Amino acid sequence: MVNIPKSKTYFLQVQGMQTPHPTQSYSIQSCKRNPKALGERRYHMKLRGFGGQPKPVFRKNAKTTKKQVLRLECQNCHKKTQLSLKRCKHFELGGQKRKKGQMIQF
Image 1: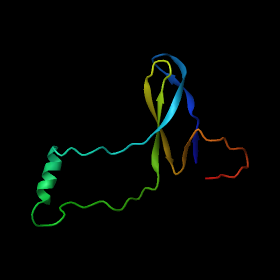
Image 2: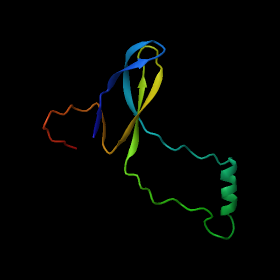
Image 3: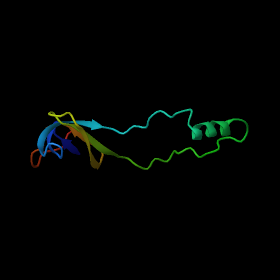
Image 4: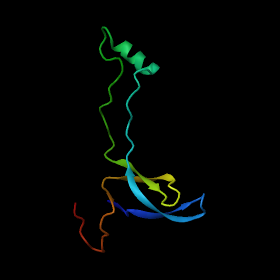
């Protein structure tokens, strides 16, 4: 389980000092496909008529976790940066800090 504070001090090369950055969780999502793209048109032409599905449909998703990305925005100059984290099953933004020997509650 990863617990990230709501604001974090981060170094900016432009300003040359550490400034407070509020953090946001940024999940990478696939965008809508463009129907005018050549590959999309070719695929739909191949789907027409007889012959069934021309390309394999991916169904075996092996990954159980996603890589987490933090979006940091400078409070002074409003410059946005992204900070990638490792894979984790549970991600919490601004949660309570755990003390030594305390149980994890979900």
